[in-house]
Image (tube, rainbow, N blue to C red; front, top):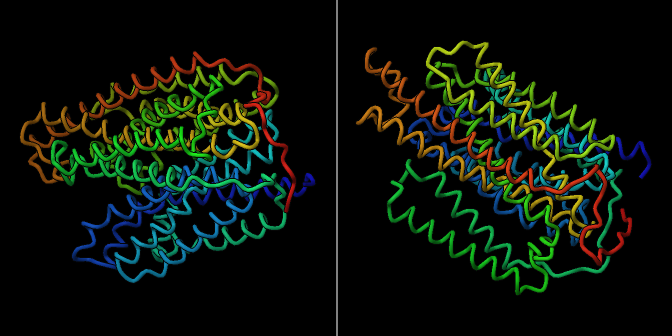
Length: 493
């Protein structure tokens, strides 16, 4: 590829990341308009599935995407994922009822491995020493996505139609497809290998069982109900079957030889804990803003602007230094330490904490996460040969996704238990606005106390990730030799 082709392809990749990130944040602000338009009577009860089915489909497909990239080449899978995502987006915009929209979101979610496949393409485009700069740019996009997603969703919904939050993907995606088809020249694996579809099915089913536990537990079903216990048992059995399959399959989805590198053995649990702690910090900041401070959903993004700024600034700065040859480990350790400290500061929030103090805490939290985002993936990518680049990337992303799911469930339990302990008989956050003044103040104090406990737990989880990061043995940002026997790539169109 010429330099101009690489730059144009990189632009396409960044736009793809924008699509992937915005669609994780843009639907929430349009939810009321969607229900009012498609099913004003029973749509509210089905609304959570718009988010859930997307996450279920994207997570289930994630491990398979990495292996497909390694077997068939990242270009083919990247363009296929974009096309599937666009088909789902078009179907979402054309939906005439909630059932059709939920089904279309499932199709869109199956293309939702978009982010991981794009990271694989970027890894092919950028030499190992430049991947940190790409990770910093990804941090910038992620930070802006947290703010811009809800704002764009509200803008389209209020001035055009909720359907445009899906239609807007089409022109951008078609441009990405055209650029990718014309410019990308990525390594091909040469001889074809078998795909371990049974292994992919097992890990997908295990992930779906776990995500359903996190979605339904404590809300649709009690944590001790037969449904939740059965899902937990199914997850354990499916996970065990998947691990056994990986040691017996000729071409496993997650090759055991992937873990010959000690850094990769640390990277997966490290990313799981990071996802666990990060989701607690971000999700419960929004809950604090909306429930305790009464900030509208569309305005939450503005309050998160300091966090987005912290992510963008620290991600770009660390990426620049690492790309110049600095070791990644100090930035990773510093980022986790800063994020843990910021989460601890957020655990002191009160019902009347000043906006400036909240903004400072969120900036520090974002600055910590900005030093972390992308670095663990880069460490994993540099630890393997080109033939395992896809599997390594999606494995780390999969660990982060599962960590986020576990964090959502565990922190939800923490919040519920603390609130129940301080205000027995209180049965829901949605009822706070309708309570008498005296009772409402006590309820807000109880919810704030619960959120503070969540932030404290989040700080503890991030400290655990910090311990793992300290065990990494990485030098300057140079590619490692990876596993032996790496096949030489052949450039194809």
